[in-house]
Image 1 (cartoon, rainbow, N blue to C red):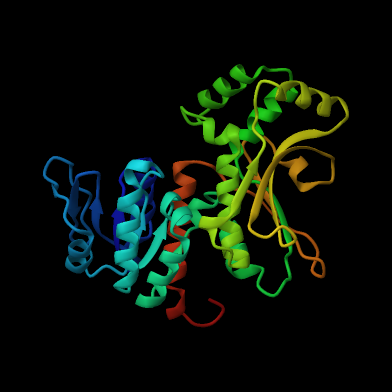
Image 2: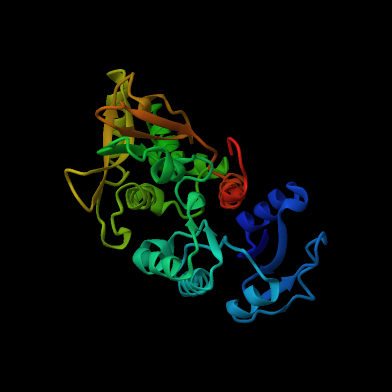
Length: 322
């Protein structure tokens, strides 16, 4: 499999390391940075940035490398949005599979990406955008088919869970955020975590995979973590409960995702998660609740999720139990 990597920040660099550990199965053929790109010979190391070429159109890079997969580790920012969309659509229409950890263009152009993949006979995989190492995308796309799942609840944002646990122990919001940042759990700007936006984003993507909802038109109603939350966290703790930022979607409320601060009881899988852990509970009336829990939120975790998607795209050429 010949790979083109677009985006060479922390996640992109971690992905390169993960690919190199796979040996000759995967060949990293090119890396596209912000303004420059490098082409790699088989088995060669990533060159220093200074001699990289000026970045060209994605079509030229894909053609020159005979790429089979475009891997996107671009930031989910307004500045990178147009590029992420352009590159993904071009790759998919040309028959090149796309594995992405970039959320922005998937959220805004879900159906456009789907049509491009159908036109090109290609695939798009988004595990790195739905919870890093937590395999929720695989659950929604494959493992739950035929199970009749009609509701799912999730704590897919490890930062909010960590901060709520700190608040329940008596910390103030500012000190809880600082501690999360000190430990590398929270970003320098934690607003997407505190507002519920990040949790809602991941649940929107899962709903798209699970129920074929158009992710770009799903409405969101989110309750934020703010200065008033500390008292609620302490109150819940005093009752033997834990306050959680629970994101959910249900077939009874089509095209709607909510994020609510809920005091959950022991026995609820969302009670058991600790620190920055994540969990998602799929309610299947006949099969019973199915829970996936854990998964590290880190550049390495996102990189491994992308690597898993790449390796699974090659699975159609295997036989036996694979």
